[in-house]
Length: 135
Image 1 (cartoon, rainbow, N blue to C red):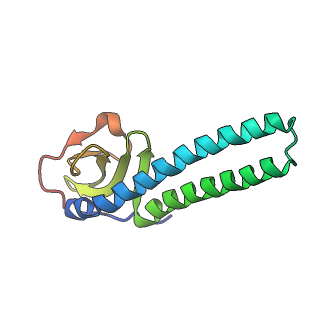
Image 2: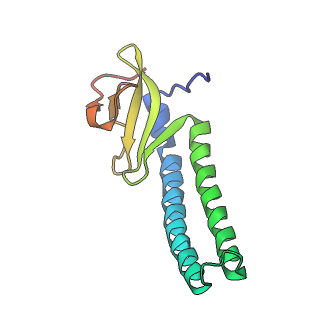
Image 3: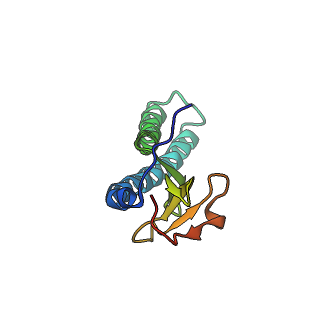
């Protein structure tokens, strides 16, 4: 099992611009995937359900490329040590130390900086404001 990357509050707040950029790309990919999926469905209807149609095959190729690129971005986040929890909310967790234990420093897209935490076992619904300096 890999040891999780532990961030300080300062480190997390410094990388938030990159995290925002990643989430923006993920939103773009998600929107493109949804649109391309609808296009594939329409092309399959026009082609009489034939998946071997050149138009369907080309649209499927583009669709699969978009899906792969989406998951590449998610993997980039994971490799950097932070974890996307909810794309719609722009919810991301970073492991940190608070009150002498490892917790999740919890950030949401509309927040200027990380100002909440929750235990590793709980989630967004039980997050609490950071009261003291995170080490």
